[in-house]
Length: 527
Image (cartoon, rainbow, N blue to C red; front, side, top):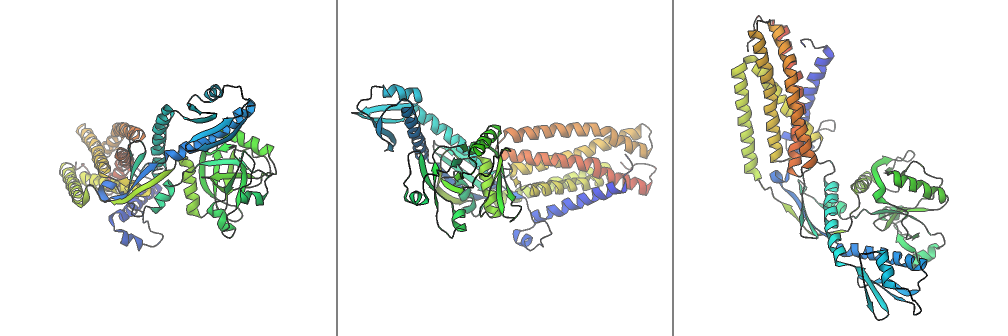
């Protein structure tokens, strides 16, 4: 306990200096940080919405678009059902928010019973010989509830994938979502992320349709024409190409479990690598094995990203999307796929900047309170423990620098509850030193030598310190798991501070005490 190898000393001192260096940008204005050379750290702790304001977006869930999509799917289901039961019909289409069709005059089958068996959530009415089919009021009410809840969750995952940015996401009514993101002066990139439904599907291309017919929209039933996306258009001189693809969805994006940016081994161009779950992997292997030599279209938000030809069966359950991506666009697509598709499109109906709810006065008051609190702790430790108290004060300051540097590395957002978490961990760091020093005093009273007292003090107090820190860390993890918003921010700062506190109390303080013992060789301990 009273010996440190040279490499350990270098590691501890070097890590402390590194954390101090990483924390310095948090105390400097952005204009100063921008002048730093590339090798210097520039990340600073982000202030929360309550401390610096940000951007606000009011989003509206387009339930009508979702309903129209479900009705279009219902048309395909009805067509397949009637084909199975050999029921003749004409004019099957979505018109005025309803599926309308007219059965053949010689039809003797009870159409209403067939539709009810197919889907109990349908509301069927008859206007003369014509049938009108839509969804029931109960289905609409339940669907609206589910869609707004799913949309809130997916917006949170897109905006706050790491769980440290602390956006405010609130549901308003049955179709609107209020989103506030701290420190976001330009919301354009965020709007682009939220404006995309990110619904990915995989379709086989209908090889029986010629490119000329696809351009004209002349396709058989069960096939639809889909244009290429902007990246593909740029690669082909800006011309929009069209593919005739089968309407049947062979694979859907909800089977994806991971997506990340990668780079092509030959061209080094950015790509998006994706991976299916077990069910999707099996289905992917079956499709590619049965359709070798055929083009397979990947469709995102009703636009074809790419349509490569299947060269062989793909058994690993993973694939790569390539084609004119920049690093930023590849990262955005990966994020969208990881977060999941929105069940319905989101329309941005209002956007504005949000001022800080606490403002500069609260920041100044919080800074003043923190400085006074730390000063009182410094004085207290020095008065009660002398030189050893000074060691504890130095370790406490290093702990604060470590916490700030890790928060900046994780790009965490600091709010008022987060500041409370930092203050709490600083107090725990001093508390750990108090436990050690009181144990050293007890060993001295028992007649032990200075070296033995210091060694036993650190060794015997470690168990208590470790237990207290671990129990607090467990509480922080539970707060992070089940909390939301600023509660998560408090949990993040608390967890980081606890780890830093254990490091400084056990290693940094002990290194200073041991170094002093070896240099001064005291007969008594000034504690």
